[in-house]
Length: 485
Image 1: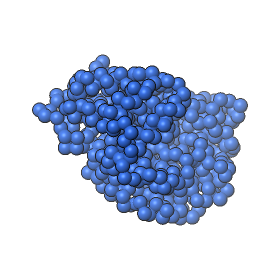
Image 2: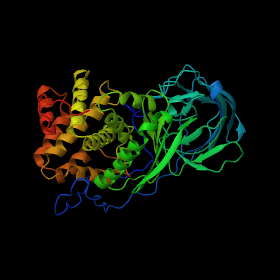
Image 3: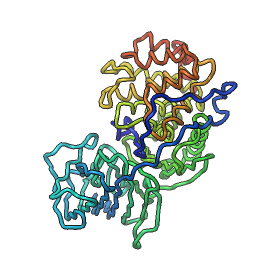
Image 4: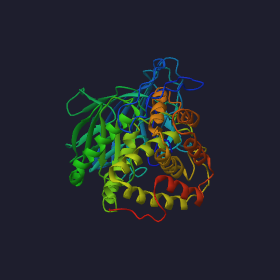
């Protein structure tokens, strides 16, 4: 689902449009660039126009972790001429006041209404009159003790809120927003969001403001969280975790900053110039990105470290999220979103194999073939819908291994150069698709390698012969055991 990772989708930060019938190919260099030799050239196309104005949310929240409750006032301001869509909020929210264009109004939850896509706990709001420019709602929400969607919760040891909990009024139709947030919460928990800290309006509050349009209001707050910032060329990395993660802090910082540096060299400078904040939240569940905030499961990472190649598994999962600083090139509201996930997973897989060796690749291949054995649909990678039972297999794993096989077979070593061109031509218009991908591959990569990759991504399921061929292209002989663990 586009809002969840894994197998979630990551999100559009801006609502930009730029049409193009075909992508011009950058002139190839006189000799193939080594994989990590230098940043690829920047494209020379005219840039997209300034993005249109987006809705703005002003949110004031008083959070009581002990009572699992938030009391909040949310004010939406829509740009002139932008129609108001249906808004949603958690089905347990109790609306205490509503103002429509600064006049008293009424709002109630249609508890029997249908939820929006991917947020099962939310229900539509019914208003007494359509707003013109502003809508203000005051409400109380008690989430209870059980996490929402395995990750969102209000509890003494962790407050983690995002759209999954429907903790503020939202609309899927508004794919980009800006916000101001002020929070009060007892205790000394570190509060992290996907916005920039600013001065609060009153003592005892913490405040944040977005620097650019995003797609969610995400907040993580927990006592005992430590943060340390390092810089990697063009991006800063802030790593936040609890003492449970102390044995792994140094190696994580090394791997993650190295990944940011590697992707800059392979694909060009990231489109988003911000500090990447990686939070190992003290919970189970899964991870997701709300740039520049990345939230991963500390419990899941701890389990990984108890398995063979645990450090490599931990690294690959978080580096996938970091790779989305580059791979937000396709429209996440369409099935072209597979490309965002495929390129992020390929980038993470290749980096992890480069770091930990082919012993890890053999182990990852065994995990992959086990997942293939459980496939339910036989759908091809290109054409798998977002709601497919095989989404994770077909959007993440298959294309990652297919691309790595192509990179290893291309005699010119130009796969990453071609992907860098996809990034440069797409990071503003967010219109990348399979056609644009193969347009760049055909300009730079060996024809036979490109044709094989296309066949594998269009094949309806991978049979034993395809798996054997991909394994051979990866350089893994049949029966190769994993290396040192």
